[in-house]
Image (cartoon, rainbow, N blue to C red):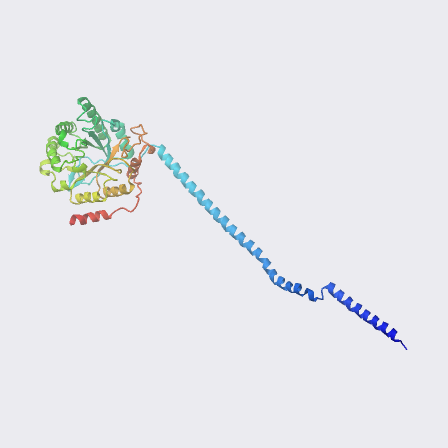
Length: 439
């Protein structure tokens, strides 16, 4: 029989063997990853969560793709912008080239205004011999004593050929420094020679010429009435056969000079002209520096006594005279008063400041609408804003675009039909003025 001691050993051996077998199995399973121990549970439970988060790793790829698309759009926009800038630069370069070419070349309008022969006034309008309505457009010189070169034959020929104008106004100042009535006999003879050369040049170039007795500082034309009678008597005899000569008997009566004063003057000067030439066009100045037409409307000169070929002058400076002045002028025109704008500018009355493009456009429209005959002030290189030629220019003809002042350039554009309006024309003014007149 097997003893107790022997059985005990056998049991212990069996237990050891079982433990060894179980441990081996567990060891093999552990190293193969088939068994999870309790202390590994928390770690293992996190693995599925990480697995669910792995698709998020694809987001960087999507962001990169969108970023590439944004960069492509941005690059396309940059290319487009670069092209626009290139095109704009090319346009500006072309514009600058044209402006440079214009600036460096002698100005040339090309369009020539007509010469109509003998003129007459009818129903407040200016007509030719066969009753076609006509319009004179031109330039006034500055004081002939100060700027005689601008009234030379070369200058007048250039104005006709290159600017196309059909009238030149010769401003013979009466009482200013070196004026006709205060500078003595020698100066008078000198000035008459300037006038004679200018009239001959205007005639040779099929232009009209205005002999302007330029009262200014002598506010009342009656101050030098005797000199005026002598001057116009001599001029009308000299140019009796010229149908292109127009006589402006007083420039700008001002201060407290009344229409009655002017009428008294006109009644003595006009007959001197009419005794020699019964049909010449005569321009008569109006009160308040040629801005008061109401006084004239109320009591015009007698056409039976002085002839029908009489017109009344109106002057304006665009920066000074504005809407109400335009309406007053329109009222006079609508009432049939024959008006000639023998002097105007786009500046203020004192010539200070900038060219007023806004008001210039409105005055240009009015003059066009009523087909008004006009002379712009002034052909010189003086330091006043209304001068047409730059002070730096020492020429009297063959002007280039760069030789012109702002007013000169505006005139050039207007004559060449290239004027660009600053805004919508103030057409309501005509309508409003008619309503005012009816009231």
